[in-house]
Length: 521
Image 1 (cartoon, rainbow, N blue to C red):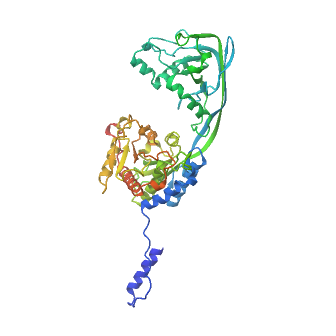
Image 2: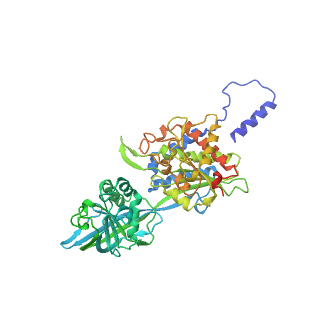
Image 3: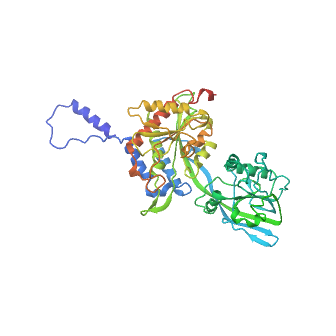
């Protein structure tokens, strides 16, 4: 309103009879609107403030962060696209931990209690989509050697054994006498799955896997995770439990479960006079955590029901051991930079000419704990999952060299599904007055850092959606309390956000999905 009043005064002054100017200061001109860099700085200081307590997804602080974003979107007039017509999508996660566990072996000479954690660790779930193991079991003990049943290893440890309703014990190691190739194959993670699968088919009451070496040394950490409710966040384990109980232990602590003479005597056989009983009491409690979802409708009647998705994650790692008296991991770059960039991208897109396709914005929760928010959204989308033609993921985009930028996905995603999208991003970048220098060294699924698997784009790629992951890279403050907003390069952050918006707009205005010809349907 102030600018309109000043314009009216100027018109009237131009029509009036000239008068001698009076002394005194001239009227102040209207202030310039804030730049994108200034808006990003204002919002990121608030979003990564100590009052947010690190935005860890299993705490109320991530819900506060979600409401912060939702309030910004509402003030900007961006349409909600979450549950029940709102901005939030509840992600139904729960903490699952062991309240108590009791394991006993009866031998010919007496009863032996095997402590939970130090000797045996229960496995509450064998993996996503699989039936769940039982939490109680009892039966006679059968030693199944190394659990091998494949002829290529020259032995069948399961042959001739009666395993139904028994407690089957095997050593997850390599038997002597195998060549290097077979030894390497047996140390692959899938080899354990093969052994478990073959035994599960024989319907035992329980399976006890005994580890040696490095894997045995990692069991204490697994045990700690099962007892510390503040650190374990996973989908609710409330489905039917039909698989045998599964327990992990170490050869060192499993004397009553091994035959006399082990390891020199490794012949599979029933251990006469020995029986096992076990019971695990799990506790679960719900966690109120949320994705935030918004959209800008497209203008083309034939394309508006399809979407270009932009994503970031709103959570961080919470409270950490103090460093120089500071224990709050603010997560300004990870991923406050991406989260605030998405708000400004949406704001700019709303005021630009509308795109043909609609634009979808998703702030995921639980990324730091295992990509939980993006896993939930892609399996329970608020728009049809096959209507999403591309996903541009934004995670840590405010640090390092002003002109450097990493792109991940065009070379890593399976079946070449992201190559066309990558070419679009390259074309948009090269047309900028100041293009970024694109670094592709992390764009390989075999790269040691494994970044293709470590952010939310991965769950979209699993659904065949073309993805590009934008990041300015790791730095010394990554996952430390020193990742603070004063270290962000706000001009660079604004430039990266502008590139992402231009790339998304290019895809949204193209009538063809950004897929190689061989994948177009």
